[in-house]
Amino acid sequence: RWQELAASKGEVLPMYRAIRGLFMPAEIEAMSGARFKDAGVTGKHNGPLFESRGVAPATETVHASVARLETMNYLSQQLLRDTDVASMAHGLEIRVPFVDAGLLAVVWPGLGNRPHLLHRKRLLREMIAEPSLVAALAKPKRTFTLPMDLWIRGPLGEFTRDAMDLLGRDPWLTPSSIDAVWHEFAAGRAHWSRVWALAVLGQKSEKTYSAAH
Image (tube, rainbow, N blue to C red; front, side, top):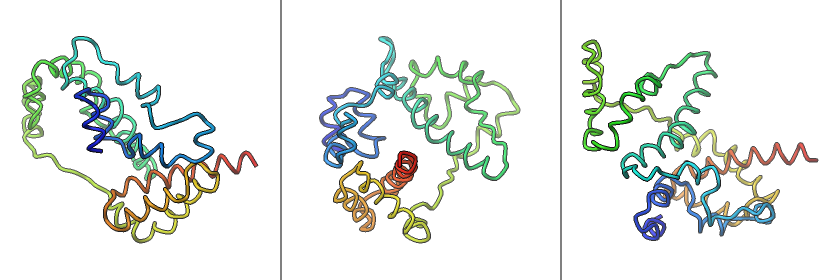
């Protein structure tokens, strides 16, 4: 990850990939199995979808570029999707007022010119003068994190490991690289998201394999 950051030479897209990416290009290249290579996919590029999201207008500031990448990738592809899946699984209708199109239309234009206002919701407070929102805006930020690390080391351990192994059977990834990621996690040197991403990918490959055979 540090090598990827150093090689970015200050360019926003490769720096963002180094920070947010689960696996670095060199790792993907080393992990790729025969099926992966036959598909013509390598770790040397970002992928067309990610590349298109990385194209910045000429007048865009670095802060605005990061905000755009976070909105189009981490927010839309993970946070909002996870919220929707988890809520629908329990019959809940979730609303995300800070992602309201009208609100973003008001706040977003001031993002690039005044990045210092991003801290502690100052930009939001200054843009919205509605008195009824003062109490809500003054509240501290609270997080909600699922105990995935504990689950994978406990009740989800066998499922995760078996699903990861499916990638080596097809073979999308080399079995040795799959083992390495699992052992890094087991030793506490890798984030749970790396093994979970491979497990989900393994489940997807299993469905594809079963449908083809």
